Image 1 (cartoon, rainbow, N blue to C red):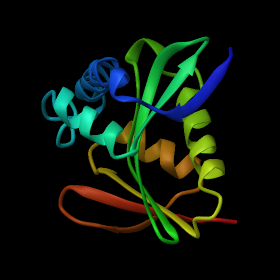
Image 2 (image 1 turned 30 degrees about the vertical axis):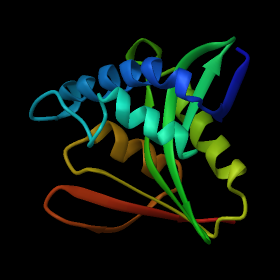
Image 3 (image 1 turned 90 degrees about the horizontal axis):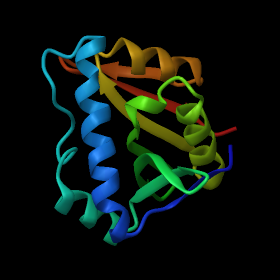
Length: 149
């Protein structure tokens, strides 16, 4: 494995859009009421806009794009808008690698924040395993944070 986590370009938007759609649609297997995802998860214009504004990242393994992330730095905080891995690459350590790279890349951040749907047993277990703490919840989401050490 030769992994790289870097900013994505607009030319990566189509590929990342397809991976995002497949990844989020697969959530029906872990409690989603139906196929779907966060706003823009299957929109090429959305992913292109995120790339243009330097929020879109890609994870490659030997040059093949296997996942992505949308990140929003804000002063001392980094909001992890979403991460996603192509379903054929689930359970290979890519998600953990991405989160470690995100935390290292934004080492100046004092806090990392994110949210995930209450029903998603896969992502809730994943973020807890990585040391994220529940800050609050509403009817749909659990909001997590992690202080930077």
